[in-house]
Image (cartoon, rainbow, N blue to C red; front, side, top):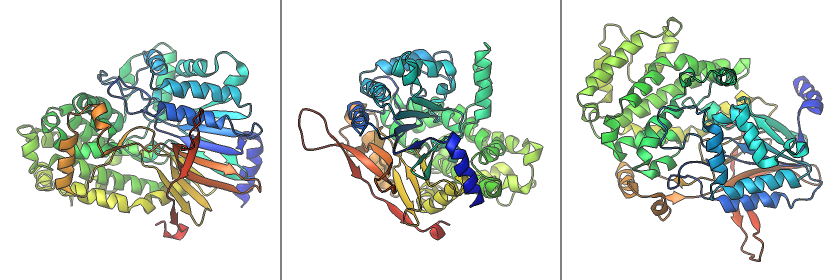
Length: 519
């Protein structure tokens, strides 16, 4: 209670208070024609315009919670993981695209027409170039021109710490969600140094070391989606990794950079990932965060190595390179930094090397594990879904008990979870991009679904029942009696008709958890 009182005192100076807050994420505005994930420009524009019709004295915020633009979506990028030199021109292209233009026009109207409005951009993992000051200047110019009062209604949370505000007396915390994903955690200190170097005139792209997820998109996804556009619609990204051999085994074999990248991630990066797992943790949660991070590495490693063997023995996929790959891994594990050379740090290899012994041939151990483990993908997917309560508990603990609403995006999986009858809430705002839903529980059906999707253009995919669109928004609002309510809604057009488009918000399913059950 004393800490909450201290927080309340700080709120009077530092925390904005609103009557209503809306949050969307993962628009992924970007990409060449024929490879765009987003197709809801008019609907989103009309929804944003509907916020301008709210009573003018209501203080309204619209939080764009990460991956609003997508600087990774260009299939022509080759090992260009942070495009500081071309970001402004690429952003201009996104502004001018006919599909995206209704969104930018509506955002401009929102910041101009709502005197008590606030537009907030939170950084994600596909839009890191927004951390560059001159890219943000271009965005401000597009939305607000040179008008100081209008520019002041736009806020940026580009340092990875997220954005917080209050509705009534209840606090909401917005963060994109990649901070909880060991594939996609961004090292914001390194990013800050990269931006600083750019401002000083140092432009060597090798200064930036991307995370595994970014490299996976640039080195693998962008290459494959030119032949199979549907792969870009598979979320989370590890789903694409899991089914990659079923999509294009030939490409899988021909991507040694991916194999090296994966091995580097599993065998050389856990120390970095463990440090990053503490970013959103209080001191008392750091030990738990480290343990969870190690478990995540175990799971992801098991899933990806299992994917290599979906079609049978690993040698069927790796061929003559199989032994070379295992030899590379053996050398990597023996060259671990000294601070990682202890039982706790080595535990991340436990799914496929148990126990770890110097006398045991490491290649033989991994090779044995890889044999006939195709079913591990299905079992891992099942256990991942069943662990939802644990993940939500971990995340709520990491942000602290002072947060009443935790709002993320990133996974594209819309979710509303009420804890202890609304005492606290967890939301995932989903996505406005296309989605593909695959059945990972049935390998035979999964194989057939992949065959039905392979080679189809985006227009052809839109006619597939496997491709869906669920444009969702999180809304938190203060009622007349000062009671604060919240919910997840799908944005739809009203059936009332008329000359002006009318927007309605359709409530989505809410999962009810008791705090004691989140374990």
